[in-house]
Amino acid sequence: MRAPLALTLGEPAGVGPEIIHKAWAVLRDDPDAAFVVIGDSRTLAAAGASPLASIHDPAEARARFGQALPILDRPAPASVTPGRPDAANAGAVADWIEQAVNLALVGDVSGLVTAPIAKAPLYAAGFRFPGHTEFIAELTADTALSSSRGPVMMLTARDLRACLVTIHVSLDEVPELVTDARIRRTARVVHECLKRDFGIARPRLAMAALNPHAGEGGALGLQEIEILKPAAEALRAEGIQITDPLPADTLFHDEARRAYDAALCMYHDQALIPVKTLDFWGGVNATLGLPIIRTSPDHGTGFDIAGKGVARPDSLIAAIRLAATMADARHAAS
Ligand SMILES: NC(=O)C1=CN([C@@H]2O[C@H](COP(=O)(O)OP(=O)(O)OC[C@H]3O[C@@H](n4cnc5c(N)ncnc54)[C@H](O)[C@@H]3O)[C@@H](O)[C@H]2O)C=CC1
Ligand SMILES: NCC(=O)COP(=O)(O)O
Image (cartoon, rainbow, N blue to C red):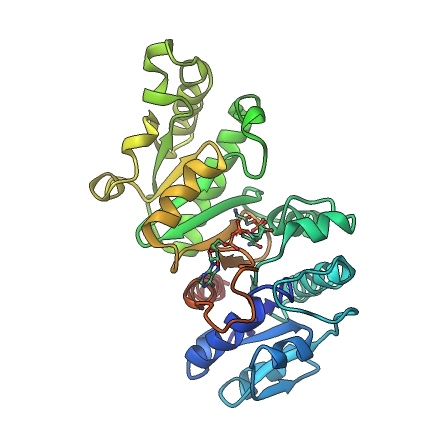
């Protein structure tokens, strides 16, 4: 049997602690979903988690999971008030992620699920990464990988998988970052991951255009002619099934989605708007192309509702289930 998952507490003043114990209450009878929380047990208890099982080794998590919420207790230095993030806890928030990554790298956990972090207090404390995705990529950069290396951010909702060529950058910067190398690397990572982790033997990728109407023959932008289409042709020559750039406004409706297994999107909102519109509560964010599995809910810290008891755990539950499915696929293949 494979190791349990690790679940990082995330921003302690956000909805993370509440949705974690709500998710555990739903999943506790499912051994495949067993996880251990890494974070501050007092915050989790204050959010209503009960009973908690403080453990010292992830190997204890499976046996405890049905009766209590397992936690590797790593106290936050500053007191926590829901809705009010404190930069004094930022170092601990980053440490919890780093500890979970290290456990995954040595195989003590079979994957990592992250509750949301708030980027602003982390940046205020000197955190130099746009988010988990780039931070975890850096933490795993020295670990060998037999497949193409990411990170690639993939958001899933229902039958839609949307994969980002650029992630957290200003819209101004997108055109110069949409390069042949970046498109091809993203497509290779997605293609390999769909085969290995999602059991899709011949993945079909759709490429979203950058410009309106896919550039309208060059009248509305030249990137499709000069970069996207040549990249698609080169990828097909490598044996990857991918379309030429398609107008993004007609790529995400029900019928269009049946034609592909994943869409390559050129910038953040091109991917996240369809995903969150289709299923805000069930969407999942997965990081592809790393030596470890990592998923997270598609929403953020929800400070406006933190501590009110109304946060929904659906997206976190879907993230845990996806991480478990991916971990099972890798375990079966190993
Ligand atoms: N993976 C991560 O760590 C992510 C972190 N963030 C961070 O979260 C912070 C807040 O971002 P926002 O743009 O305000 O997005 P948000 O997702 O936190 O909130 C948007 C809306 O969704 C609601 N909401 C969020 N989670 C909910 C839940 N579980 N149940 C019910 N309603 C929920 C909120 O109340 C709010 O009305 C930012 O610092 C952002 O960077 C945002 C997305 C992902
Ligand atoms: N908009 C998605 C998001 O902010 C998630 O970022 P990450 O923390 O998963 O890198």
